[in-house]
Length: 308
Image (tube, rainbow, N blue to C red; front, side):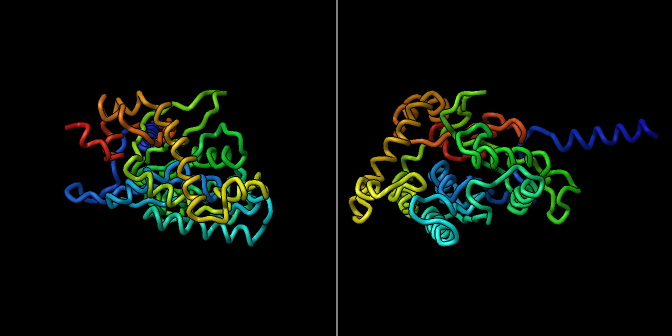
């Protein structure tokens, strides 16, 4: 009897940890749109890190949700608490509208999200209820405790989203999503390695327009801003400040394109890869499904022209 139980358990464990990705489609003849959920620590992180690629997915009819793990209620130098949380929620709602995606802000205080069991269950439910094929978040080694902790929470949910009796009030996934990390510049204990890089040249203006909605952060400086920030960013002039914002993001996304040039070339080919001006990049988390290169191309259906 014990031997039979061991064999059954082994089969179940193998099925839960299968590494091959497949979309959660009920009918292979008519696959449903991909479903993507991205977790940022604050009401701006997912938009900053994934906004361009999110817009590309949405334009193709795929379903994208951006989640802020905290309400951002201390992320400003002059205002705080409920008024700031409400303001930042309104900002990401407007940004989501401009990107063509949906958004949600969790009611957890900024600076206070912890890797608790209850928070892990919340994240697992969100992933399950969205029926996610792709899940994105911060790496667990990062300068900000909220970034680290949401990274841990999402990573720790990677296996649990398929376990039948974990959070039984939500339906377990019948597939293992691909979990991806946003890029950062930290090197200890290990540096970010881009497994995929996506050109956002064609949606760059749209991304800047979306980020423009995050006024408390991009024009007023967020938690570390000041009266001088308002002057430097020309916060009172909508036209001038947006041009400054555009130049800022040209530098930021341009630096990513140079940093991950070889990855861009590997996906787009020599000519197109060298021509990319702006990009977003992501690293596969080994705790979720581990897609092959061809599976990554199916998950990110932006490389057709390069393959022809």
